[in-house]
Image (cartoon, rainbow, N blue to C red; front, side, top):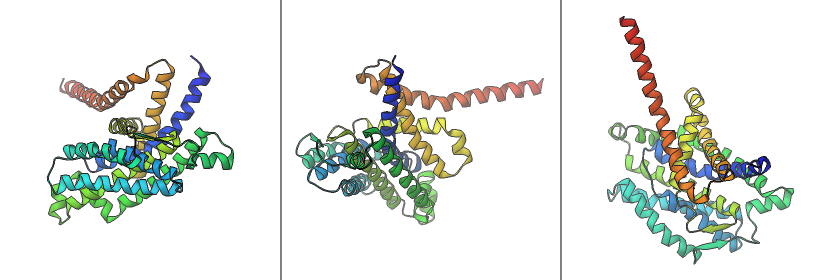
Amino acid sequence: MNILSILGAAQGAVAQGLLWGIMTLGVYLTFRILNIADMTCDGSFALGGSTCAILVTKGMNPLFAVLIAFFTGLVAGLATGLMHTKLKIHEILAGILSMIALYSINIRIMGKSNTPLLGVQTIMTNMQDRFGITPNIASFIVGVIFGIVLIVLLYWFCGTELGSCIRATGNNEKMVRAMGVDTDKMKLLGLMLSNGLIALSGALVAQQQGYGDVGMGTGAIVIGLASIILGESIFAWFNKRFAFYVTLLSILLGSVVYRLIIAIVLQLGLKSSDLKLLTAIIVVIALAIPVAKKKVLKKKVAVSVAKEGK
């Protein structure tokens, strides 16, 4: 086992984890805040990457291309939200329908299944040329900047009246509706914002990896869930004692931890074809940890009660 190769892979994994972490923040909005399992993620991630790739190859400023990709994600989230709230299609089925439709839409956007960015100026290559840094360092800096800015914006937004209504809708929809809040609109806004962030992440990842691909979002929802659960499990102590922005930061760091685990395991000899299985195992273990803790706590309480009874 080569330590230097592992360190090199870890460096790239951290940079990649930060960019994918923006997608994780989007998944967190629906999965934890709105309490909706949105399957649109896979399609909207590829939508952002496809849109950004084709715009950059046409000569558009890469930052502006990322912004356009964000708005395409808003539209994808709107489509899912309308199917769920207006047509009363179950949230999971609505997401699946959007995901399937986006596969064809992404091919339409690019005109083919893959759009390379060779010789095209991206955010990362611009930073490399200007500051003389490596691709991994450039991706790391971009990930840190976008991650911090988005966490600050999300923290501010969730503290507003509108953001509080969205959080309350996910927590207790019936109570919020009784208070006169249109919960359908809150779901629409939440789904739009979530998929906007996911598409933005896809745009950044496309620029980082050097191509946009119709299948680049495959399994994104599982990766997002794994990152969320890892972040919540590892940084649980901080999440309980500090403000909401620490929770958002832990979600971003959970994505980094996930990528580090994948990078190390690959260096140890695991085949890339086994990554989906590894991801599923990580999610199962992370979900089982809280359940195991509760069982242990119940046993301790039962033992202490039995001792006091004697």
